[in-house]
Image 1 (tube, rainbow, N blue to C red):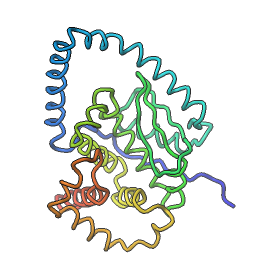
Image 2 (image 1 turned 120 degrees about the vertical axis):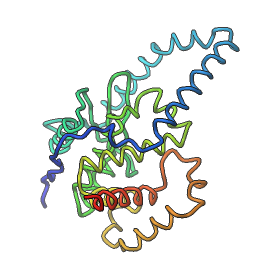
Image 3 (image 1 turned 135 degrees about the vertical axis):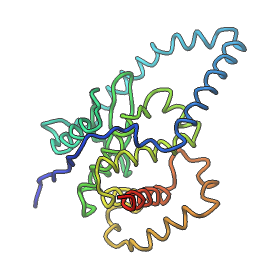
Length: 264
């Protein structure tokens, strides 16, 4: 049995994540800031300043919650570093350098029966959580470098400050911004990886899992993605979601790649 973890890092040129933000994101963020400012002023006025006191005390409460959350993660997850899963660590370091990220980022593998990963921030501490199922799924999917897409996607969120306190809160409530953020992260990760097949493989893995992935008819997948993108009810179906529909993300990645290649 081969217990050697495969190399997954991808070298390349430095990427400016700001150049890959999905169109419309800036406008949605401006609207969010405007609503937040107006809402805060109204809240302070109608609570006779109590809301202002809450805001002043919030950092102390947040400090306690963040310390507790980090203790929980560090006590139950496996930290990734140069000694533990060094291949993942090297991929993170390589992508950080290519994105120009200088802040520290901790990576943990946590047990969960879902194919998922997330970038969170506790105070000034950035953390990427990889579930054991997403790591295993990528390794068994037939293309281990799929894991590089997962890592690149989460680092893209950090590089664009999507996991900041205000931005992450707004993204959950202003769901269109959340969906645009996902497209932006896909754009950045696609630029980092430079291989549309790896990105496509990673997205499809999230939808069908590694066990059935080898049996998928890819022509049918691309046809379905086009149908979803062109269906006028798709936007209505997505309206309550913080993430785009999977086939919309697949179409978005493939379509962008085709446009880029046609311009060369």
